[in-house]
Image 1 (tube, rainbow, N blue to C red):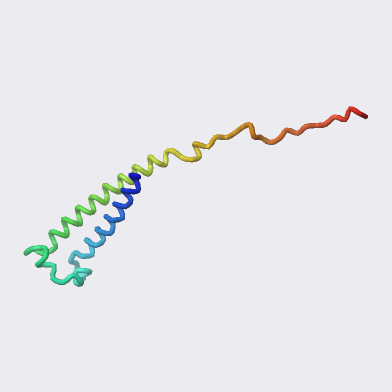
Image 2 (cartoon, rainbow, N blue to C red):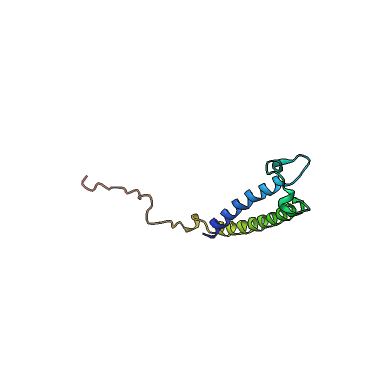
Length: 104
């Protein structure tokens, strides 16, 4: 249950991180061209400092969540289904019996 929740959080963090990276201003405008005037939404300094802080925070949460997922999956892998198989020794190949014919 916990690994499922962390996996869902991981997917959401990836999507948000990709959006935050694509919205940042670069040599090409990227997706910022589709959102109109970003300067008025994020304040006088523009989206640079806000998006940089958001990207850093999302990246940090992504790394922490990845480490937590790795730890949980490695502890779950320590117990294997193969280790729980019980070999029944009573079911073995039948012994070869020799019949002696005493009526001869």
